[in-house]
Length: 363
Image (cartoon, rainbow, N blue to C red; front, side, top):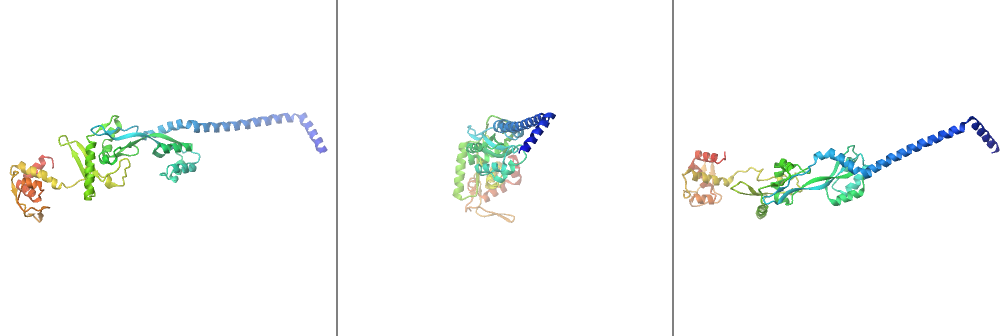
């Protein structure tokens, strides 16, 4: 120990004589200052980023998202109302969930937490979205206030909400086939929502329809009762103002809820009145009778023998409910006699029938 002490003293003496130690200390101080400055800069960058994520992210991300996605959102869609001003379709402001995956710190953890609050979303799908390199991804549209509150409490960086528009139909199935519905982005898909899509996008005032909701209720109830009574697979009905041609009510069954449409159920989505093409059947007798009377060859009191089937080529014309006495024109129309109507058409002749049908626009 004595030997080492003496040696150390000797080295100190040599170092002091050559001026080595002061320069070494200056160098060490310089290095310490540089390292300290680098650490401070690193902490400053991390701190600024945390402040940006926690405090400033909402406004900056919203601006980014506005520029990136608001082109695809609908700012508004005019209401549809009936002839008395009752709202049939309107838009409400909701909140939708989106994410900036570049800011999400732990995609797997975030996906797990969100899937527990939003069970209709698959954890795997959320994870794939949250770990992508995109700057914006939709996670869920039109959330309830309760769901929004729970998600906010999670405090996940990179997750935020955006104002969105949702189309709602207060009367549900009652006006389904007339009004139709719009998709999640506010694009008209069926009914008047599709037919008037351009106007609904451009106008701010409600668009009034000829529909009368009171008559729609009556027609819907009567049709539903008739379908139940006769165990029918479907049915349709319409009320029209014959003076103006306005449709006052229109019902097709089966129907659907336009608030939750299911395009896979094609039978319910099919409007039998506007989309169906059917043989006129006995309704043609209305015009056949009018044609016969218009010809002047037949009067209301003209009688025809309907007691036997009418043979036309290899076909036989019969009545669903046979009659055993001759019928006049009024009775033929009242009882919807196929034989009597055919005899009236034969009496009028092909040329008169063709001319009359052309005149009323049938051909």
